[in-house]
Length: 377
Ligand code: COI
Image (spheres, rainbow, N blue to C red):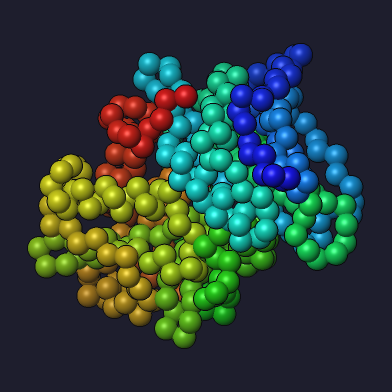
């Protein structure tokens, strides 16, 4: 049927760059500022569906100024990473989760959906071709940025007849300028990122631009990021660059709490992985070093009142963020209502749970521990 042609990896056309650039030393990398030699591009039209995928030299796009992307923001993206393992082989981490979410986002803003399996094959080809760009220093990787935009040259607000899916990649170290050190968040109840029935659970470009001004204002006061709250009870939601975990003392053990997938937060791949590892640990099927055996894993609402109370009675153990770019980032301070809540971070600036999660996730990503989440390219 017209428009029904799916992405087919077998139709790939590759144009190699003539003169390859060389990656800078890992120590000189700023997150997302350097790009590998090649990109993947796949055009779509409503009449014909997905066209033959192309891998070509990284370079500018040429778009009509009337393209819908510039006016109404039909734009979504993903964040994933490629790693070089102990044997020098290339691995992806749970790419099926990114494909699923990308299609969910596309559906929400009337952009075309596609076969995630075929796109993973193409991303694997791209990463293979640019494998020299994967840094092997600890905590470094090749950040992969798939994006999908509406490109129809027309000013009416309606579903686009043309779209472009592209994938670029960037060698990266830590996301935050502070490196692997703890981050400080500002929780300002006057600012809202998402709301019930909104789009906070989709990875849309339009969810991010409105957060930049509040982030600048928080930075002026010495905080790297905003902790987005919701409602009169000041429920914690997410950070915008990462999901959030709170560790509380509970009886002889601990409770690991993260806000539920209620439509207002991004369903993070790292969030899901941490929950699964925590549940495996609680069930005794894995042992996370330094984490008490008695763990309650809770996807539940948690508000600032509970955080303040826990700080007061000494049951607040740690808070950390989790995301593909941020990996696992400890939080040492939350500015709230004109005061700072201080969060223990333990030795070396990382709490026990954050440290164990980071270690286990990196072990899986780097193939040091065999796990179905890690996919060889
Ligand atoms: C990621 O963690 O991959 C993200 O997309 C977050 C951010 C860089 C916007």
